[in-house]
Amino acid sequence: MMLPCLKIYNADNVAVALTALPAGTIVEVAGERITLREAIPAGHKFALTDLQENEQIIKYGYPVGHAVKPVAKGAWINEKNIKTNLSGMQEYTYNPQGQGLPVAASTATFRGYRRANGEAGVRNEIWIVPTVGCVNGVVTRLAEKLRAETDGKHVDAIVAFPHNYGCSQLGDDHENTRKILRNVVLHPNAGGVLVVGLGCENNQIDAFREMVGVHEHIRFLETQKVGDEIEEGMKILRALYVSAAQREREEIPMSGLKIGLKCGGSDGFSGITANPLVGLFSDFLVAQGGSTVLTEVPEMFGAETILMNRAQDETVFAKTVQLINDFKQYFIKNNQPVYENPSPGNKTGGISTLEEKSLGCTQKGGAATVVDVLAYGDRISRKGLSLLSAPGNDLVASTALAAAGCQIVLFTTGRGTPFGTFVPTMKIATNSALYQHKPAWIDFNAGTILEDETIDAACRRLARYVKDVAGGAPVNNEKNNYREIAIFKTGVTL
Image 1: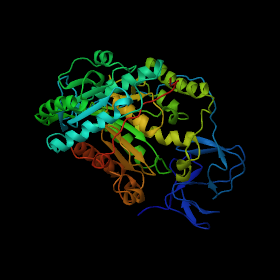
Image 2: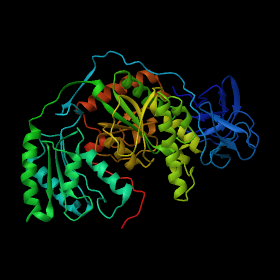
Image 3: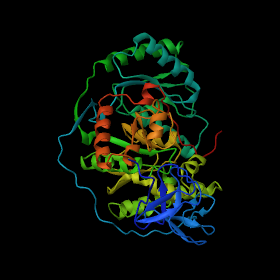
Image 4: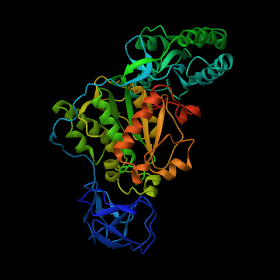
């Protein structure tokens, strides 16, 4: 049975309503009876004591802001009476918290596809990837024709990935586009890839071919050089399809899994249910010798020192500091406030400040040691928990996680979203109401943690489900064919 409210940490001076509570409701928190002075929406906070102006408001055991005016005991705390403590750049000191999880000997496996380079895929799909947005129509038509011709019976999917970039870009934007597209093309979830170029774009197909390297399952087509690009493309795709169709799943150790950690449409339950659940799963996978990746750098602001102090050594600490400061400088360079967050949907869901959002968000990284920090467009190179530079934007960050080599993205949400990136994008609901309301979007319910299931039991259930998905069970974005890529852009368009 669900409790009416929850005080998360002993040090907290707020509690969270687990269901909508009318004004005048008497709740018992930590042995004390409190009368609510106003209605508290589900997921929102209320004061456990009288708070004075400028007094720190504590949640998750940390300050999440300060009161901008006196707040009475039992009153609703939201963005109207709390303000962030965060501002601009700051100095950081390495205070290591000890090393985390030992890698356990394990016989656990999943049924995946072993690729020629030793990597493991959880899907065997045919992908058609444009070097430039000018050929988006071509790649879309090629995918449609191959699906119609084959019914897609012998591969997991046939997908085109149109995007807007590949030309009229300079500097970092141009290189970011090339790196993300390279990583898409090299991803082990693809059993066959056709790269389609135009011919006059900045992302020249010969240079891109050199960047990708020689692989038997990757082919290239420059459309300005052929008479009928659809006919030529279909010849290549038919051969790729026949080859990919011969591949079969085999047992692969769980250490071969690389999982992305992402949240979007967060609410007041995110830091209580889904995010700590995903963090527990991350710790489990790391202990199996696998890899997880945490991103959304702006949603680390306010909780970044927790991650810094879990750095494996001073080198990783310094890279984490650079990760945070570089993203702050990105805001400053564009004359934008560093702490322009949370979103309207977050506020409606019960999140009032960025540090409150970040303290919930970073729980997806569990308690493992941070072993590496990846630049945008980098690929995973070390087993364990890594941090990745990317914005909070759902499509851009999820694409970056998949491009880093993650075969699956675990995506927690309290508000719901249908999208998916180019790998299975598993939606994990923070509350049962969302899970029941959006069955065509949500794949897994973490709201049971508020009801009758322990977080350990939920983690075992999630681990089984991830194994099933890695073994071929489709998630909702795949069932709905909601698949796309989005590339981070920071500079000039010519």
